[in-house]
Length: 121
Image 1 (cartoon, rainbow, N blue to C red):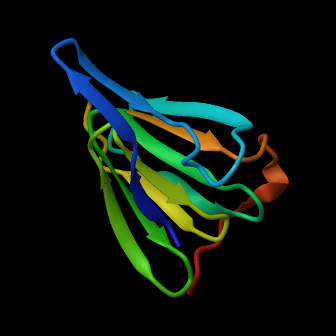
Image 2 (cartoon, rainbow, N blue to C red; image 1 turned 180 degrees about the horizontal axis):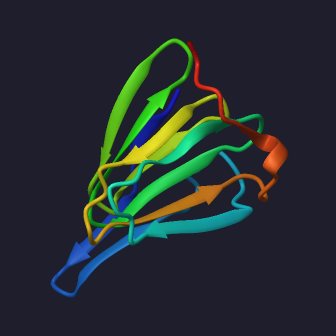
């Protein structure tokens, strides 16, 4: 099941520094980011193998998740929040603010055969 973790952040008068180190349960093989989104819904799939970590670098978005037994919606509105998604987590990203930048770290390289587009019943 998807879960939120707080990333270690250091703050002083110069600003903030958020660190992603030894907190992800996978090795990063792919990084992508989504921005300039209109009212569209992104995602709408789950995976056979890929684990993901989603971080809103700027702005806010929502991620709705269904693992087959539980549905939950997460708000990503700070770069110190990280949503971990497991392979079986069917997810949709939506309600992006106009300035939103969503970065996703993935455990696998892109493979179209890894995608499952059918949601759970």
